[in-house]
Length: 424
Image 1 (spheres, rainbow, N blue to C red):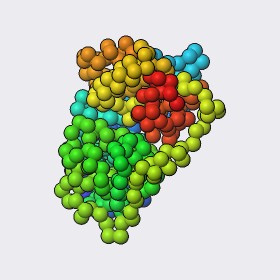
Image 2: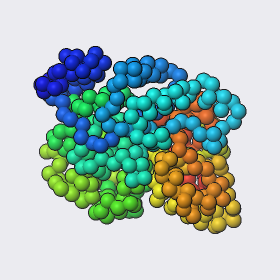
Image 3: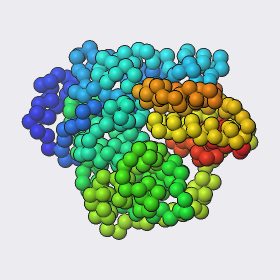
């Protein structure tokens, strides 16, 4: 790898042994992927994926302590993924015992470490850091040192920033030294599409289901999606970005997509169009039947597949303000049609603390509380990591949560009927 004089100096220990080790780690990481150089991180803020104080992460805490002791801090303030615990989320005595005595025993300790290293704000914990309310929204062309697959794919695709799918702690290391290896999605060639996906559905496809179909088909490749602008238009307004948030999270978790292009909509697709598509690109056609096939392929791993759901989790990735408001209206309407006053299944909506703060100042907050829905800032995935929670029949509209846990997927229309009318 070709390094600048400044980078060589860091590697040779002129900024201290710890900085040298961090630079060496990043150089080795880049060389593994054929990177020929390091490039500066140019975003204002960073984002970390590791946010939960699991007892098993002792090596992480040890590394953090060493960084703090030697005065090594991130060059950028950063946000982090959601917290795992909230007493307001349903949990019985045994589940609570496992959470607090056996799982997330280091949460307070770890959060203090994050604050010392450069956390943006004491409540900057969310997987949707790019939302306006949170404030960690990179510009087009910014080079990032992020992890969290759903945030990375959104930043690359919807915002036109540049970031590889880094793993935890590599995100922090890049931010500390201010450089990341130049390969993959940081390069022009790495951002070109090797798949053309044609959406030929008769109605707007559910974001999480469409993203799942594409992710499982293209895996880590870059897809260029044609036909979706019919439903989303050609402007990245609130409705379109909310859809793409959930769509991208499914492509990243059901596959390993780090970047997608939506014809006539996302920034690079609007600039370059089909010039982004590589010669010989593969083609994937998605119609109504293909979406049904994909949905039917999902395994149900409940002990009793026909069990009555005991909990509904929505918000993986975290919900937007618009989603919280729209769901409030839709639940009220569906409950009224069924003659019910409250949701029939305990239901939790999760969103960033800053989004919830804004939502709680609107009329919708009291209306949502009145119909029995709980709002929280937690990571639903971290909640389901509790083995006692994993045994419960939990339903969700999140394909990411379905993929990583025992939760059963329903699209939003189906989920709405279940929690308001008891339909299955």
